[in-house]
Image (cartoon, rainbow, N blue to C red; front, side, top):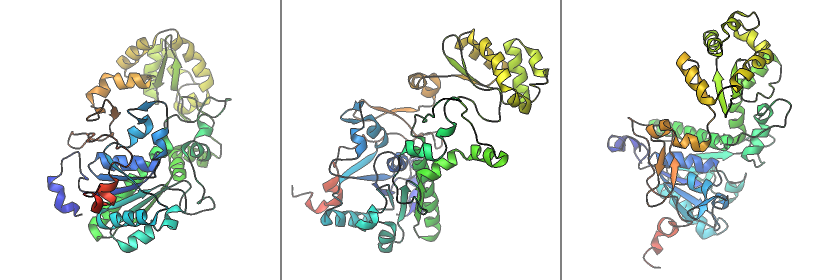
Length: 392
């Protein structure tokens, strides 16, 4: 494919129209990489085992026949069933890659693609322009490189869970699959960089990303504090180390997050709370002092905030220019006027499903859902065995 020759005619929100991606992916990480590319116009061919991606059965809830997780991750894709233990099926898949694919993404168990001859070295020897992205668990090298991994394991191993939750209580996993989806994002970023290089040189690349590397990046700011101080970061609840006042507070009817991360903002907050004298209190006069005395400070603020409803504080704080936000449920976020104004929730043509779109726009246009998540194997004959398409 020549990206340069096709760019002028591409729709703004589909910059990868004409790019062909083969996704040897399951669960979340690789499918999310595929989704990003598919939303931006690429033709993504999802390769599944006979029983399908495990995520098809992750539920309840199920949505129009498949798990809601699967549906959310696999719109705008095609599905082929390929028995990777069958030489004929693997040969057909390799032929498809050699003839059509620009990119292969995979997150099969460690060593599996090498056994099948579907690894980067083998496929790129046949097609040097191919970009091949591995989404692993612990990375391409090291003593744990052959171990599998999942999002909660990596939130634990990567240090995220040690800082998540309330002090003195059990560690808590962040509910969204931030490590899986973050790895999917890094996969897409790596592929985009490799596409840029291929545009310059004509050569593809092997891209490696992993759950552990992503988890370590998510805690990089906290890691900087550990390396600077030699002290371990403790559980922060809704707050953040090194900044005060900066957390969620219980209100009369819910919760509100208040982020007064500078001296000027703290002065404004003190005014809203009815205690302007706190701003000149030696214990609270600057951020280092507020952090050192945060237990005392929060002991003063907590009961005041708890005495009024959330809307009272949001109105008062916004009027004073103090950053704040109510703690919304997911449902409240979906229904909010800001979500609607940004056109963040898109319907799926021909279905009753709606999904949260990608958080990016091009010339004011957000990538849209073009097709529903595929039925298992709906495109097998068309894509893997086209010679049989007219001979049912």
